Image (cartoon, rainbow over all chains, first blue to last red; front, side, top):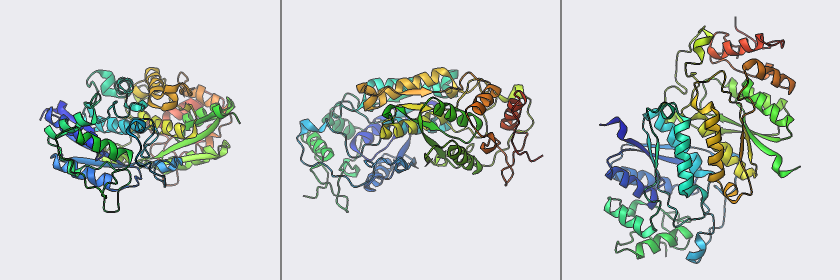
Length: 231
Length: 231
C-alpha cells in the first residue's frame, strides 16, 4: 500500500460522482468515500451513495452530518416545487432544487480536512462543466483556485511534503460520455439515484431536470437505462 | 439599512474573534455571528461566544453543528494532554490541542454559504499571523487565496454583483494590540474564554499555551485582566 495513493472522493449517489470514484479506482487510488447528510429531502440519495460505494469495493465511507438548515436557506430542504418536463435547453439555466449555497466549497473543505487526517493528497469529485455550465463552482477556474487554496491551507501543503490535487475527471464530458466511462469502469448504474422528486419507494419521476438529463444520456449510448421510473 | 453592509463574522468566544467582531461593528457592518459546535471538549467556549455576541448587540447568531469526529481525527475531541507552562518562545511551534484539520477552510466555507443566503459579501475573522506564525491558514496568502476562491465559487461573485472580501483586521497585531483594540471597540473581555483546560466551573488554568499568551497580552497593556484563574 503506497501512502501516496490514498484519495478522498465525494459520493452523492448519482451517476457523476459514482463514475468519478470508479475512474479513481481504475487509476490505482485507494478511495475513502465522503457523503454529506445535509437534510436532503430524499434519503434514497444517501442509500444510493452507500450502495454504490459498497459495490465498488470501497471500505471506508463517512457520511458527514452538516446541518445547513441553521442558515435558513429555504431551498435546501423545505418544500419546493420541482420543475417538470422542462425543455432540455432551459435546464442549464436554472439552479437545481438540490442546490446548496457554496456547496462544492463546503464539501471540498471537509474533503481537505479528511485528507489532512489520512495524510492523503488527492480529492476526486464528479463535477462537469458541460451539462451545468452556469454553475460557478463546477468551472475549471474554481477547481484550480481550490487546488491553490488547499496547498496554502495545510501544513503539508505549505511544507511541500504534500501537493494537493483536485481531480475532476468528468469535467469536459457529456452525460453520455460519463455513462460510457462509468460503465467501462464498472459502475452499476442501477444503484445510482438522480431524481429530484422520487416516489416514496425511490422510483424516479422521469420528468424533473435530473431525470431528463439522465435519460437523454442513456439514450445517446447503447447502454441500457436501468432506472426504475414511476410512469 | 444598506444591504451591502451585512457581514458574517466567525465567533469563537475568544479574545481575537470578539475583537474582530467589535471592529467590524465599529466599521458600520451589521454582523451575523457564526460559531461551530464541532464537539469541543469545553462547552464554555460556545457559552462565551453566545455571551460576547449578545453583549455586542448582535441579534443574529448561528451555531452550526459540524461533526468532525466522523473522520476519526483524535486531536479534535478526545482526551489529549494539554501542554502546561511551556516557554512562550516554544508556543508558536506547536499546534494547539484545539486544532481542527483544515479548520479555517471549513469555517470560511460555511461563512461563504451563509453570505450567499444573506446576500452579504463581507466575512470577518480574528486570525492573526503574529502569535501563531506557524499556522498555514492564518497567513495573508491563505486569506488572499480564499477571497479569490469566494469570488469564483458563487454566482454573485462571478457575475460581479458581489465582490467578496475576507477581513482579518487583527492579522498584523500582537496580542497586546488586539486587547487594546478590542477594549476600545467595546469588548467585555470578562465574557471571553481562552483556556484549553478550564475547570468544570469554567475557570482558566493559567498554564496552557492559550492562557500564557492571553496573560502576557494583558500584562503588556494597562488594561486589567478580568480572567478568573483557578490558581
